[in-house]
Image (cartoon, rainbow over all chains, first blue to last red; front, side, top):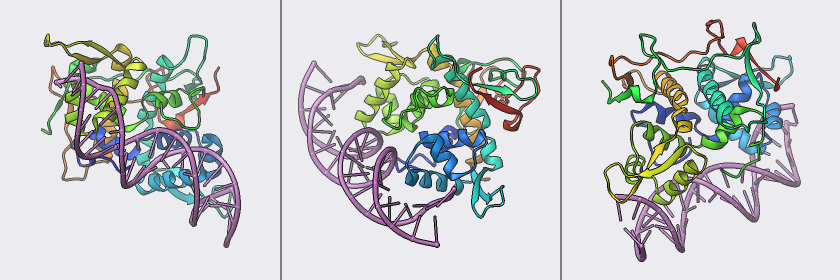
Length: 148
Length: 148
DNA sequence: CCGTATCCATTCCGATACTG
DNA sequence: CAGTATCGGAATGGATACGG
């Protein structure tokens, strides 16, 4: 999205993901979308960013297929921004960001808000990277293969 | 890090994480750190960014405890940037970004590079959000509790 | 090799005013 | 309500030159 040294064609999926969503406001908009927000005004009030900036970010997210414009659910003449499947599949990224933040970005006294399973009311499990065998992996256990 | 409408004190862990690492270069540096890079010149050559920008990003990452300066492993007079435990715990975030990118950011013909388990050579499992019971959860199955 | 110091162009962001 | 238009200041990014 942002004009930078071009790595959009890198064969690293991390670089490509970041090219699509790797800026602060985009991720925050997506976070709010996962919280159920769909209207321009909702995002604007929640995030407190300038409307012109919000406009460009929403346009970009729609343009790359993460959000889509749909008729307003309340029957009004307006439209709403809804997560597509591609957008909903960002869920693990948001959860991973959330869990790291819970662990490292809060002082002992502070309490973060919490993501819970609606059914049980329990917090979700900590995300873990696993081998096909189920064995837990940390970064040292893995490596990147050029492109098979 | 970046000067923006201040949400660093939000009680949302996602916002706080993004405040620390929510920009393109920082995540790319961290990606390279997971690939084993430790030297200023390595990052600079890999990412192709201006040295002054790299300097500020590295300083920030050291400042927030994700990287730390350690004596050079080759015995030279220089120092290297190593991931701390706090930094290594970003691993699931990088894996989540990678897996989303693999799925959505490559055209049918293109092949991304691949993260594999060193031991088996097999790709790592797809990250999944699960309840304490082990049940798979998507975003609709979850909600955010204000701060219990 | 590992930065620091400048300079300049571009972009980002916030604020405000305006429109259908 | 949901944007668009414009403006100015700040930060970012690239390039280059310089120093320990």
